[in-house]
Amino acid sequence: MRHSLRNLLLTALLASLFAGPALSRADSVGPLPEAVRDVGIDEHPNAQLPLQMRFFDDHGQAVSLGDYFHGKKPVVLQLGYFGCPMLCGLISHGLIDSAKVLGLKAGTDYDLVFVSIHPAETPTLAAQARQSFVSDYGKPEEVNGFHFLVGNPVDVKSLADTVGFRFHKIPGTEQIAHPAVLFICTADGRVSRYLYGVQFAPRTLRLSLVEASDGKIGTTVDRILLFCYHYDPNSQGYKLAIGVMRTGGILSMLCVGLGITYLVRREHAGHRTVRGED
Picture 1: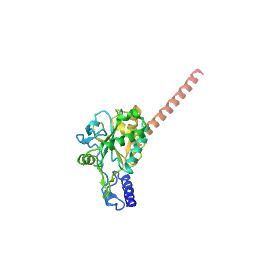
Picture 2: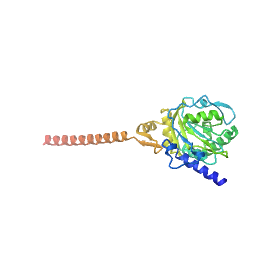
Picture 3: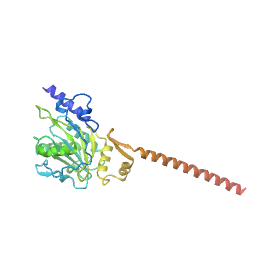
Picture 4: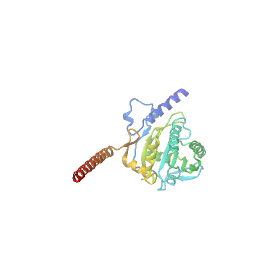
């Protein structure tokens, strides 16, 4: 039983890692186990989150999702569950590793909201998960930027459907198969970007947050980079825009041409001056 469950979880992990926008039920290379067949992501860019939905925070207080979207800073949203034996921890650790060197402050520049998809999980478990996350992050002064929530299945399902997050409870276990993804959301609660996998390049995460904030966080350099780079869903990162490369090449050629013209004219002027003196 343990071996079969472990194999099933590994299959779920592999399926989730490739459950990006390019993969659908019909795109599968081979048949997946029934328990993970409906696991994946249907991207809904710019979808408005159900901010009125009610949850409980890690203090057991009733909150609404909208309490974390004040129109001032973007939000990194993670859906998973605290008792996840494999995938959620990998995603969280990948996020922590990237956030440590991000150069942005949690609670000031952005917030993280983790919503449990497991109906049996409690605020007590949410508090333990938050404490573990904050401890690994190692910056206690930014603790107010991390929020861990639980809720009833109806509200959780509504949120998951809104962002296109398809998960499935593994029969005969307390485990849930789900995709590996982070949602970058705007300050007013719209889906801005999907980041897949269990590791997240700091530049990609930073530029995604700057993009979601409409340039309200980050530096002037970040905004220039967003102009020069575009997000490539295939590589899950920002790449130099072809148009910018072409424009840059043309500008470089113009600069070289102007420089050569200037030098030639100066040389000719020097020759005329010499001849005049003679």
